Length: 359
Image (cartoon, rainbow, N blue to C red; front, top):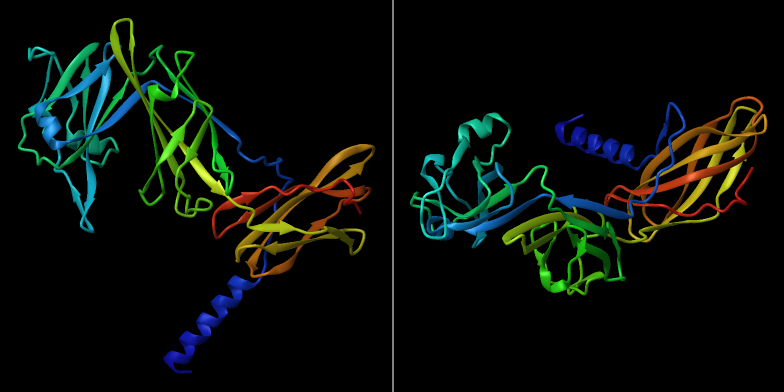
């Protein structure tokens, strides 16, 4: 067989292997899965992106407690199809001053090399700053358009930004439930800045009415194949005469029913073997996995017998055959905890199983 025929044969074998169903029986029955609904998160930190010009002139820091940790890192920017990243900062050329320009104490914790050794390979430096409002500046000759991230962490602070939001946005609904509060007080739409960014870095315009976040343009990504959408929240307010700033980030995923389940049939082949036939119809072609747990009655009690998962390519519709091994003495068999995974778009679906689907 010549080189070209061999390569063609290998491609054919690989394609066939990918198309064939892959069956996996878990060593023990799996715990039920549930769709991730509401996300709850709190923040004792804030971050902002600043230019090299702003950092030379001085950027404000809002510190509400002593010994806050400040991390400054160069950021990449995209311009004309090219990527530009600011050069690293010299920690010894960073200074802190009050509103009148008077120098303030600044504890330099870690330079770039030390941060890199600690796992921060982004060129960042770390500082510790005392309570109060101050301006952080660099005497380096930074380019005006360079971008830097200034990240302030106030571990253990009593001042917390809280968010409760939907994780998923079903395609066509065009709204996400979102509740925001600072120190237990609800935040009005005018008190927050919201930015929704796609996995590719595109900013999606949004509107917030205090209850729902509504994207003002269609979301293109379905599932998490390229990552999640990122919702950033920023707020700034006066607390006890001082400016308090907080940031928070939440993931958002647009979902779609990319496949539907038909009538399920249980086929008992013999005393030890049962096959569950689960017809799946794809609304969007791709590779799908179907997982379910077989439940039975044993000595008057419900018993989770086992969990099986089958994955295969799907264009149109197909029957997913899930085999189960039966222990002696079980009866009244039924399926439960059905999960369909769209592996192409990294999306999970949770179809309902009717109680009538029994052996």
